[in-house]
Amino acid sequence: MGLDTSAEKPAPVRTIANLIGQWIGRLGTVWVEGQLTDVNRRPGTSVVFLTLRDPVADVSLRCTCRRGVFEEVARTLQDGARVVVRGRPTFYMSRGTLSLALEEIRPVGVGELLARLERLRSTLAAEGLFDPGRKRALPFLPGVVGLVCGRGGAAERDVLENARRRWPGVRFRVRNVAVQGPLAVAQVVDAVRALDRDPEVDVLVVARGGGSLEDLLPFSDEALLRAVVECRTPVVSAIGHEQDTPLLDHVADVRASTPTDAAKRVVPDVSEEQRLVAQLRERGRRAVTTRLDTEQHRLDALRGHPSLGVPGRELDRRADEVVALRDRARRCLTARLDRAGDDLVHTRARVRALSPAATLERGYAVVQRADGHVVRRPDDVHAGDALAVRLAEGGLDVTVRETRAAPSGVRRGRSA
Image (tube, rainbow, N blue to C red; front, side, top):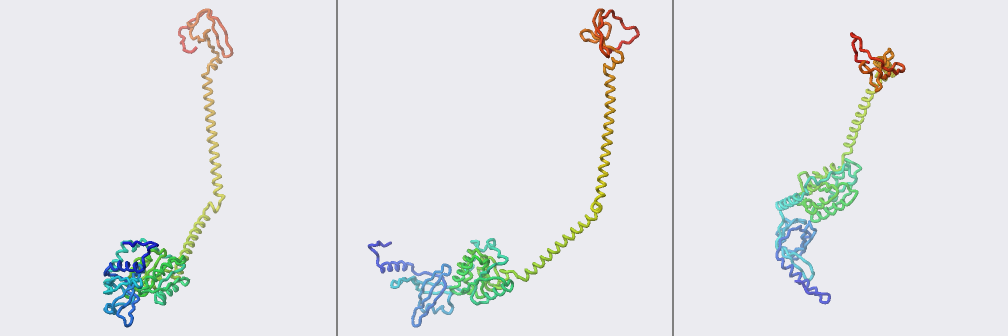
């Protein structure tokens, strides 16, 4: 229940401290896992002071225990060891501090460590942090390489020397950190994030030499793994030897078997690239030479062609063809005109022969009654009828005096 307090009725410190102690006391005995650090065994005292640290959340809790409890496991413990403890949370009202009074300490063995690492591996794999699709390719030639490693260690020397031997102009930003112990995770995470924020760093290498499972535990820590996953810069993991596989190898974009291998992966070999450039240059020269030879042969063949050797010959041949076609066209047109003229003369003669005017010119006449009908037989008129006679030139008006039948034996035609 909350206290009924106000600015006019404040609660004294002892009341608040007493309530906090009561609430903490209700937790009872708890089991806690963490890293053991800052062990202080003061001479002449029966109490050992130590700190239990959570490497993921970077939270620490002060602890105390009887010397006898600590001495039971002291030979198997070292600073930074993983332990599971049983203790009772205690609030000291006089100092206003929280402490955990330990009743039992159990070191986490290798088997337990491997089981926990396997559980963490399964959890991260289920989240897709090991998925090859999220891994990024390394740049061909990074401008600056970020290196996180121990101070003055073999890993730093291997990376720097081998990288500069391969590409002398490579530049490094080196962050020296603790690579084992209770401070390793926090320092490595800070260094990784700082280099990732540096806009000049194109690739980041986390390197460490070989060691035992406990020595390499910081590089399987969940806090470090998630920090690497969040990086925008490609990360190369170069931890231990070929047989060492901390979880950092799985979340990093590239796994190098050793720090020396990491140097080979982040920068190209200048001599190899020079050989490749020389090979490409030679291939290009051969390709250009072959193309020039081919075109030269084609040009020589064209130059040897008669049309180019004696250009006028082809023009003369074409001119002769034009003259022949022109003469042929003239002959064809003349023949057509002659045939058309002959046809016209024949048609005109036939028309003239069939024309009534031509008949009249031969002495014939056309006799018509007053109504315009042509007189073909004597029976068509009677004596006294007025007729019109049409001649080749002009005509006559006549009157019928009498009609005569055609002489016998004379065939009567149908034409007038």
